[in-house]
Image (cartoon, rainbow, N blue to C red; front, side):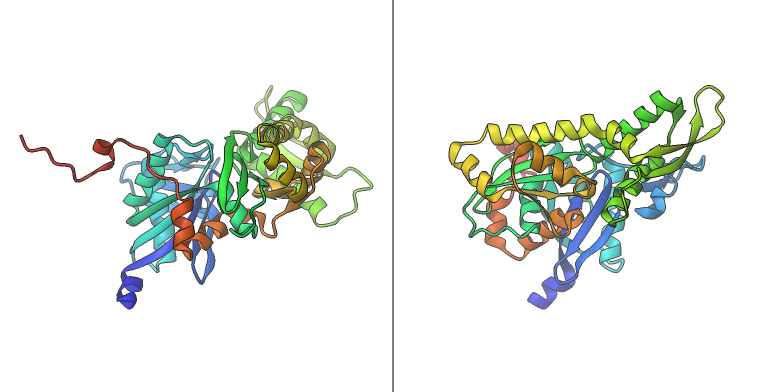
Amino acid sequence: MNILDNFFSEDLAIDLGTVNTLVYAPGRGVVVNEPSAVAIHKYTGEVLAVGGEAFKLVGRVPKDVDVFRPVRNGTIENFEAAEKMLVAFIRRVQDDRLKRSHMVIGVPGSSTELERRSVRDAARDAKAGRVDLVDEGLCAAIGAGLTNEDERAHLIVDIGGGTTNIAIVASGAVVSSHSLKTAGNAMDEAIRDYVRAKYEMQLGERTAEQLKKQLGEKRAAGESVAEPQRVEVVGKELTTGMAKAVEIGLDEVREALEPVVAEIVAGARRAVEESQPDVTADIYQTGLILTGGGALLDGMADRLQRELKLHVAVAEDPLCAVAVGAGRLLAEKERLQRAAIREDAPVWQASEELVVNW
């Protein structure tokens, strides 16, 4: 029976992110780590490209193609595109054989029941036999190495692309969790606004993201910082509509990102301030765990440590922490049953098999 189960079904953990989608398969690790994008033919509905291949078309879309980024601020904005994207990723994992899967998916802590239902429906349309939703903060904590045996409270800050999830976790369960719509995409938009105001130049979405990553990765690589680093970027001059090149420095990027970073710090501070005294005491001892792509931003960990006066530890693999944590729950059914967010719907809505005979 187990052999048949393995042939016709496969367990998968998914981090359905605004910027990237990650798929974790037990025994294989993270098997998909691609941009959350899908290119669909306008007239036939055919999926032409998904992931990185579709993302290459952003800003340069052919006239007969629509490129969708179906997840915005951690929630599904375009249901049909999200379903097609998920199907394409899952087919890739399952060698083009779409099996009935048990999926564990991380969702933002402040997501509504309607938003959770849209994630469940998209996964079921992608041939999921069972869908369990788990708070992203708890997934990130497990992916960072926290266990059920640790009864102390830990503060988790997961800075993703669309949302920053701030959670307090203890004994393998969520004590509190909320999400901010202030994360990687907001940082990109802040850089674009700064360049527009200072240089009267419009930057593309991809250029702003590359600028943020390029300057951050240089510091992470241990390069000399004696002189402010500068990167040339090319955009569109507002007055003439022609191409314009300017050099942007690390100090300017920091200035542009300051309001976004300050809001994330304020959200983490608010989570501590609103916690119970015993939780606050635990966090003083255990500190803060930083995950997500924002953890790689130069100076982010230092800023949180300085402002909150807490020790800040960056997860070993911050980008994959949510997917890895959700994957570990797949192997521990009892732990998953406790962690899964229950469907809070009336009986007449929750039951798909309810039949009324008049």
